[in-house]
Image (cartoon, rainbow, N blue to C red):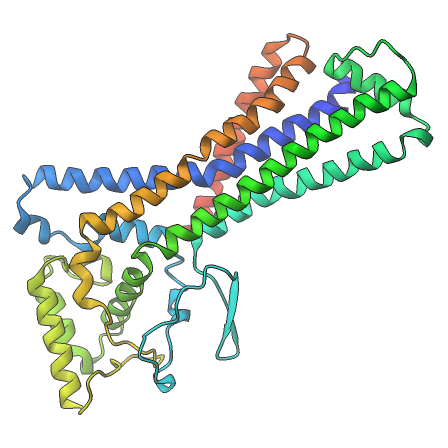
Amino acid sequence: MFEYFFEFDLFIILLLFLIIISFVPLIELKYQSDLYENIDKFNKYCLNNDENLINELNVKSSYMWNMSSYLYDYDNISNFFYNKRDSYERDYKELNRNVSSSIYDFKVIDNVMKIYNYYLKMSLGLFIFLIIFFISQMYIFVIMDTYEKENIFFNCFDKTLNVAINDESMLNKKAFFRFYVYILFIYVLLFIIFFSIILKKLTELYADTDTYEYIMLMKEIDIILKENNEKNADIINILKKHSKYKINDVSYITLNNSKVINELIDAYKTKSKEEGYNSVSLENKKNYSIKLKNLEKFEYYNSEESKSKIKNKVEDIFRFIYVYILFLIVPLYILSISLQGKYTYLLFIIIILIISTISVYNIYNTLQA
C-alpha cells in the first residue's frame, strides 16, 4: 500500500489541503463580520440603547470602522490620494476593481482590496495545481497507445481506486481513462467558474458598499491628527474636545454624532472662505489633496442601511462555502476507497489537514500584524 499511497493518494491529500486553504479567507470574512456585528450589538445592550451614550463611543468600537479597516490595506491607501497640484475635485482616485495595479505620478500602485488579494493568493495554489494535473493526465491519455508503462500505471490506478476492469484490452483501458479525464475536466472547469464568481463577488463587496469612501475620509482625518499641523489647529481642537481619551490616531476619536460633524464642516468652510476658495486642501507634509469630502455623510456611513450593505454582501460570498464542501466530497470519497476501509488513516489525515490549515492561517495573520 505504501507504494500506491505516494503515487495517487498523495495527490488527493494535497488537493484536500489546497481546497481547505482556498476557502479559509471566506470563513474569516464571515467570522470578522459576525464578530464586529456582535460587538456593535453588545455596545448598544450595555448602554441600554441610549442614543447619546452610543454616539459618544469612539470610532474603533463601530462596525463600519472595523470592517473597513479589515477590508482595505489601511497603510497603503494614502497612495490613492491626489496631489494638491492635480486640482481634482475629488480627494482621491476611484477604486478600480478590474485591475490589480495602476500607475499614478510615475509610480505603480497596487490595489488596496486586502481580502480580494488574500483570497486570490490562497486559491492560486489550488488553481495552478488543478491545471497542471489535468494537463499531465491529458498527456498520459494522448500517448497511452505508445506508453511503455501503461500496465504499471493501470495496475496502480486499479488498485488505488479499487476499479475492476474485466477486459484487459488496451481499448477498454483507454475508454475508462477517457471517462476519468472527462470527469476531471468538469471538476477543474467548475472550480474555475466558481473561483471567478467568488472573485467577482468580492469586488462587489468593495464597489457596492460605502467602505471605500468611509476609509478614505478616516485616513484624511488620521493624517491631520498625526501630523498635528498648527494650520489645522481648529479642526484638531474640535476632534480633541469631543473625544474622551487622549487621541493619537483616528480610531480613538468620537465622531458619530451630528454636533461634531457640523462643527467640523463649519470649521472647514470658515477656513476655505478665509483663503478665498469654496474648498481648500488642508495642510499636510506630503501635499495630499485633503478636503474632507463626504464628511456630511459620516452619520449615514454608520447607519443600519450602510452596514446592511456590507453584511448582505458578506452573506452572498459566504454561501459559496457550500460549493467548497462539494469540492471536498469527491477527493474525500476517493481517498476513503483508496484507503480500503482504513478510516483511521483518513481521520488522521483530516486532523493533520485541519491543524496545518489553522497553522498557516495563524502564521499569515501574525505576518500581517
